[in-house]
Figure 1: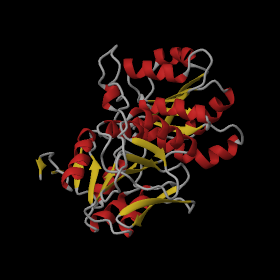
Figure 2: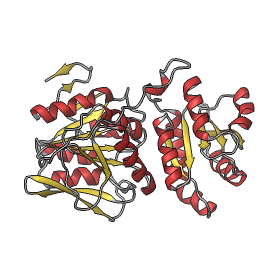
Figure 3: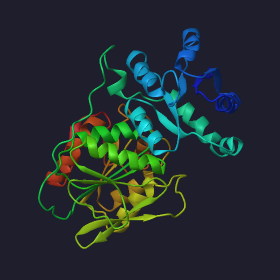
Figure 4: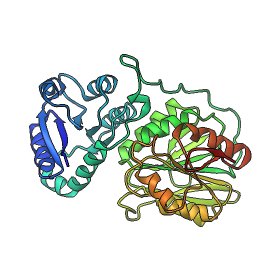
Length: 368
């Protein structure tokens, strides 16, 4: 079995050496080179094209985001972003993820040995998953020289008081989720059922993600705070490092944040969100979507919701960057239906209007 070739591009010599030692020690990986910036990387790219690129964003001669956009236009390749845990770094990372980067890992500023001991196995697993990933179609199939599909323009917010919500939509996602959420929310009008989202992401990143989505989509998007009410036209995103739970409030719903231990190695966890919704009754007034992501977080919770009578959907393999979480939900029996990402928006609006969603059989044929 051939090894996965990795190219490291980072202006820190210390980090290049540390990443090189970590990845080179794995028998399934081969470090093809390590360069201080994309211009220095050209000689490695000319000699052998990597399967995965580990990319810094802040470099002096050419920043990582500029390089990423050129790469995805000319020769789409899986990219893992190494980003600073700052608000500025979070915004740049989100733009990189929206432009086709596979995943992000936090760049350590100190304690390299401890960092690589703690995060090393996850980083190696991310590199290996990236090599097998489906590149997002909006990036991979854009004709040479043509920009990917533009992001939706923010529409005017609805005016006047908003009624409480009986129907709610719950979404869980991880790797590939930034593009998936942007696509889904871009397909929804300002007045649609309230959404609660868990995206595996550090704290700085979820705040920046909420700000980005609030600017891009028709709905109001906020990073959730304990006690926030789920209202039509509003999206609440779980803060990084906090679990998001659903609570009943009369006929309506509110959210609660918790600092309890990680579940499935994640906080926030999709399973925590889904299980909390099942505990407050679930039922046909809830729709849960399990989207692209590594691992199996959300699979058990999706099944728990389905058993309450809630509607449950999993993203199909062809449109998932990583099919891990949706596959786990399907195999566990939690998915009522399997849909491509481009049909999820219509499913949400069908649920809003009629309280039901279209289903697909395993061959892709649509039924009612």
